[in-house]
Image 1 (cartoon, rainbow, N blue to C red):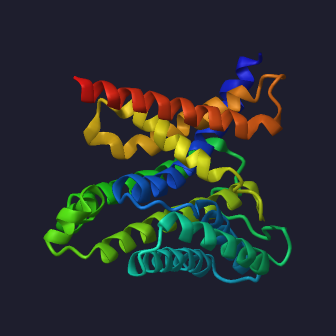
Image 2 (cartoon, rainbow, N blue to C red):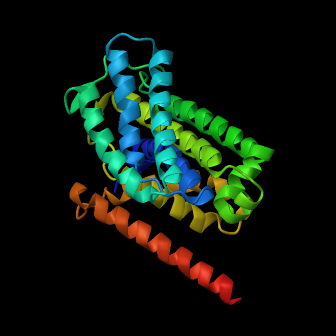
Length: 290
């Protein structure tokens, strides 16, 4: 095993992929853990953000306009899903599965073909330096977590958390569940859309299938992160970030072994998620027993 190759290429690449994956993990964490709202549309949202951005960029539309348009479109999907689910009392899992199917076809219509190369790659992704890319994405992640942590400390943020923690109590205090869950899904979808845009810039193209398995990867990041951060409950918000970097590193290191093929990727991911769930479940049982 070439350790020089691991430290010079595999590890930096894993960290960059992990940082981007942490945005997806954070989006899943917000809906699933903070709001107790199951949203299975992460993969479609990831592609939708990248598709809109890539198509607009290829049509010579301004970078910022393309970026904001992609985020707004994905935010609107989050708003629509929440409204339909809560207003008409329909299971969010069912709604998001249907929405994901609709968005898949929508993505194909936007792209026109299954994949498109990006005509223009912007800084820092037009630079081959992994360090420069890593620093840029780290700055973005730092700003995201700083903003979210400060938001959760506000009065609106406290109500936001109460809606997910105890919906009955939230209703007793006349807190509008629809409003706060909508805020959550908009934030989550925006983060996933940004991850999709950044990933497409990093690889230089948009492909209709490039988010396959992303939902389970994001879930794995949250589970692994929670398992590690369990003793630091006040810092659980960082579990998607820690979990994503660890997951990405494990994934890339495992793929170095000859007996593991690319077709085994989903199996490896599934095993990692199962192990994380079992260990988290054991921990909860022990804490209840004590």
